[in-house]
Amino acid sequence: MAAMSWPTQDELDKIRGIVSEMAGKGTEDVRVVVSPYRICPLGAHIDHQGGIVSAMTINKGILLGFVPSGNTQVALRSGQFKGEVRFRVNETQQPRHRISKGEEIKVDKSSPSPQECYWGRYAIGALYALQSRGNHLAQGIIGYICGSEGLDSSGLSSSAAVGVAYLLALESANNLTVSPTENIEYDRVIENEYLGLRNGILDQSAILLSSHGCLTYMNCKTTEHKLIHPLNFLKDHETEPQKGYKILLAFSGLRQALTSNPGYNSRVAECQEAAKILLHASGNGELEPFLCNVEPESYEAHKVKLEPNLARRAEHYFSENMRVSKGLEAWASGELRQFGQLMSASGLSSIKNYECGCEPLIQLYEVLLRAPGVFGARFSGAGFRGCCVALVDTDCVAEAAKFVREEYPKLQPVLASQLNPDTAVLICEAGDCARVI
Image: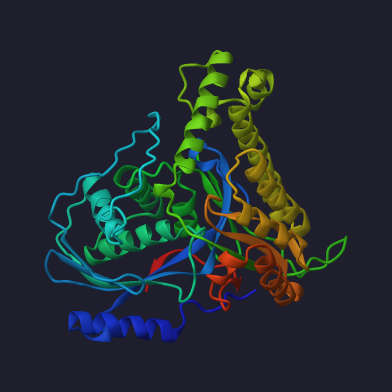
């Protein structure tokens, strides 16, 4: 299955033209970072607890055109937001919210200040991440950043894609050789230390490590990762022949930044509290309070000690870890139907045990499960906003998209009316990793 061309030559020419005009340089001098969005078919909400996860990128995402500025100045414009961001790479940046590993999370229920919402914070966060790990930058960039046109990126980890894009651009301009695993850590620094979001490393790992058509597996405790190559989905099997697949994205119309949603960080805190109780009960109280440090046998033996809320969070973690293990085997053997069933079960556990869905997202998930040719579906991203993702039989994907476009507005007419009808449901292909062109 060949990847649909992204970015297209027209997209590259457009961004090169804008940067060329901004910088007064020729278009041939403009470099472009391609940083794709990701989906997480299995492994929801367990990366921050050191669980095992799966992910893949899609052929949509962030493009950042840039040229080295010739001095320490950074000047950035955006296709989505107004204004220009300016700062210098020789200015020392300070974190906004430092969260140490294992530290108890304080849930901030206040809304972010206007400065917090300022779109340039990821660029400054990238500089902070590089500086804080001993990199000295002398060269700024003149750049223009934009997301895939008409696409509501909530639920696709656009924040990690943006962070990775700025890291790659600053590194390229300064001739820094940085491995993908180092950049995974740098992007974690942007989100955890600079912005105060207590997420794991799934998103940036998917963006930096993926390869077209493969499922990226990662153990978030050890950071071990590998690419799971599928059997040819079009090849005859002893059972029924498996079909090829497309990725269907369906948007709910909900938009909210995770950094301003107390639900995200409070769930992480609950997982850590459950881990603390289970570790103490099993005589391992000295270990860090993450569920990955709790053996499955200890969980089974001591889960009765957890109050209902914490019990649900722990049940999600241990059952989701099991679904990922089974899902990797299903993917490797080309069993898309089995993989899809595990995806749908993951979606149900996110609703029942992790309690992260809201009515519109749950309704959208249920619509997808009824759509023709859908192997499986779940929320994409954290499930506090955004969209749902489904794997769909290639032969049925147009029919499935039409079904969702017709059915969801019957349930949520107000939210659906805020969506662009052309991009409310998107048919995508698997993508590749982030790179500089």
